[in-house]
Image (cartoon, rainbow, N blue to C red):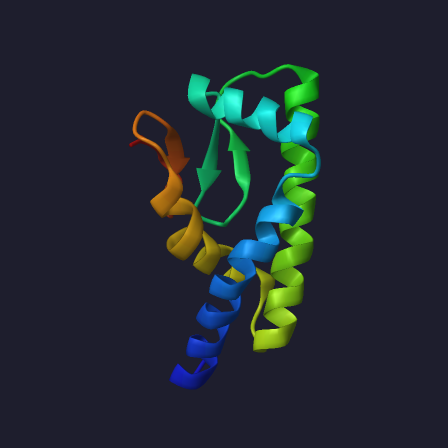
Length: 119
């Protein structure tokens, strides 16, 4: 991928940040469940741009994670199509530019090496 395409991909993903916020939280109750699970350390962001379940969670929380990830998957696919890249690249760029900086102290995330790390 040349530098221009990479720049376009990063710019598209950054612009997607606001739009993805709506796609990410399917409902207010799902967002609240995921936020509680993040605060408890059971759910965290992953380097691929999706949420991951770190420990056992209730079925409603698992469903909320799945719904949010489905919204992200659609948003990354749209962004990738616009930028001429892949959804995987779009998700990883979203993690690097938008999600990682927003992870609060004490919350967990899975790095690119596949390890859960607490901020």
